Length: 507
Image 1 (cartoon, helix red, strand yellow):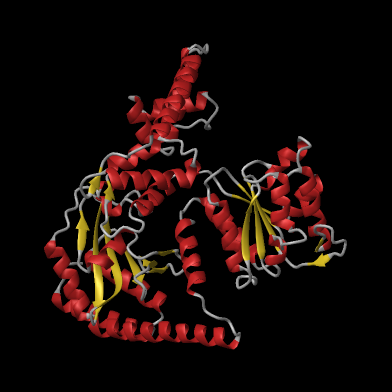
Image 2 (cartoon, helix red, strand yellow; image 1 turned 180 degrees about the vertical axis):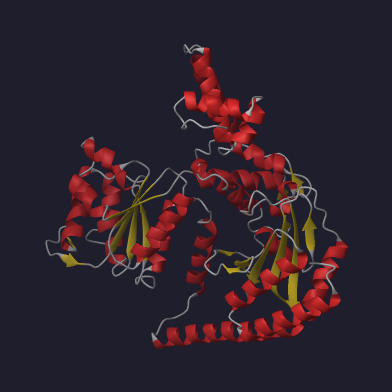
């Protein structure tokens, strides 16, 4: 702990130096370092983020445990990205109101945090995050100096891990180039930009989203049809593109066909071609095509797509000779194809072909704190001067149902950035259409609330409902619930027993 006996500190320092030098694998090294700093400072938690050559960051250790499988954050993203950019210590004694921390997913118990960049020979190697759960905690420059002095005393292990990581990253880069040359693959900057863009767009920590992304990654290399469903603007096209880039066809053509923007004749020519021109199926041979909004296909074109997926051949124009093709089909739809099959407006046999694997992308309003993360990301996307959303603005984001999902949020953030003055933003600039939609939603909600007011209920029913909601809100903590309700814990237990929710107790 800071201020400990010098003899004990010297002994501990010698031990941790030996331990760090014994294993330079980054996950092991930083796990040991995080535990030592936690013990040294006596704080509640210590996290360490590794900083890569491109200034992207990854949470790699927390309180002595390795977290090597954590997602990688892009350059400048989150609090660690901010500190990596400014290259100096940053601390906040009220992280919940600090815009720098607004886009981070973090433990709700954290009240104060100090971030210290670990610099070796002018390069930021990692960021150390010292966290306190105490609302009265006040970090200051003196605390920062104590930790910096400790890191200076650990300069030899830090120099060694820096050399190890430099060699590791260089070796990985060289192996990648050798493999590409051996396979005769031309490295195209456009492809790498596209992959990076997809990683940015499909960000978030929502469980349903992560499950969908994991499923997409698993099926990408299986070369089977994939059906992606979800509301407008949730990222179906981007996920389809990601499936292609992760597949063995990633160096072959990739085309998106907009099924809902053309009449039947034009769409048929676009897909299958005619006597004078090749269609997309021919042009994309050995690649992937995406049938975007496949539900808009006519029954006749559904039949032709089914025939191709069954035989691998097409006929076009007046030519009766079949053309064999090898194209992977990925389809997207806002509407439930299963429901359309039940309504006889979509062929069931084509549905089963397309839905070999089904992936559902959740609506933005169902993704919780992802709205906050995406809002901060889109606010500064492509901007040289960073701006920050205050807690008031982040709270305002919850007032919209985001019927347009990611696209609507991105437009709102671009509008907010353009119309806001200063570095800190307290007001979201919704469009007139957004405001009208929210007013209609509130009116509908008021009508529903008024209807509920007239539902007959006894006082006992109302009491039971209120007690249960209070418990749910407080995470089942009966002591806090009793205090909030203004009754004793014993009275609360007796009431819960009378409701049949718990067994009889002597509380």
